[in-house]
Amino acid sequence: MLFQELKHDIYRKISKLKWKLSCRKDEIVDFDVYSIYLGHHKVTYCGVEAIRCPFDYLIYQMIISEVKPDLVIEIGTNKGGGALYIADLMNNLGHGAVHTIDIIDAHDPLIDKHPRITTFLNGWQQYDLYEAKNASKVLVIEDSSHHYDNTMAVLQKFAEVVTPGSYLIVEDGIVNELGMTKKYDGGPLRAINEFLRNHPEFIVDKNWSNLFGHNATFNVKGYLYKQQ
Image 1 (cartoon, rainbow, N blue to C red):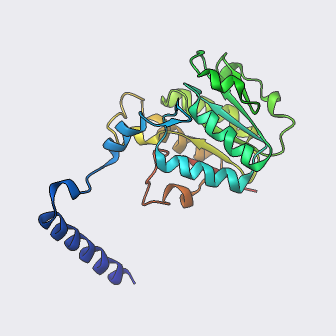
Image 2 (cartoon, helix red, strand yellow):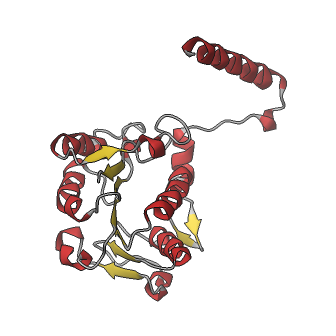
Image 3 (spheres, rainbow, N blue to C red):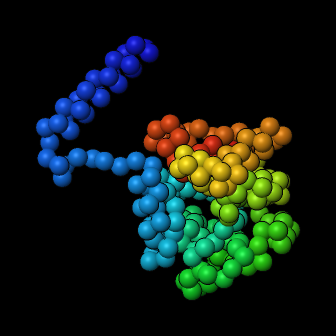
């Protein structure tokens, strides 16, 4: 089986090389992680800036449809396009709320008009976990500074409110692949690896991170499933 897969991979690469040598310049497909990184800063949802990898946007829709959470806690609002997208997904489900947390008030006015969204502007440290007490299914998205120590502290605080069968999603482990490891002191990946060693109730759900190819996501090792 392995030989057949290797043979197929070699054939695919040869065919691709032949195509590139023969095709017109404007027909060549040429993108990589960095080009996707540049493009994801231009992504909007309903006209609101929504900085997220398009692969992960699709994965979020699939996860929310599967888990059907009563509450999504998003740490890192920014302009609010992500919160708006998730709230509209919940509209499709017919239930659920979004608590989106930031330290600055920079979100689009559309966010305040959505009945499923509540904003918290005093930072995640001041968020009272009691706010989640009435939710039977809770999903948490950590998308704040991406620095190791901050990510680690967020994971330690919010792990307990994630319900079994749901997810603690850690955004942007891709920073290491982009050459930003030092800038973020190891970033989300360092925090995830340390967190998992002490929290065996969580596992990396590779069904999501490998959906489009090995770690074809900006949330590398970031889809943390809380086991039943």
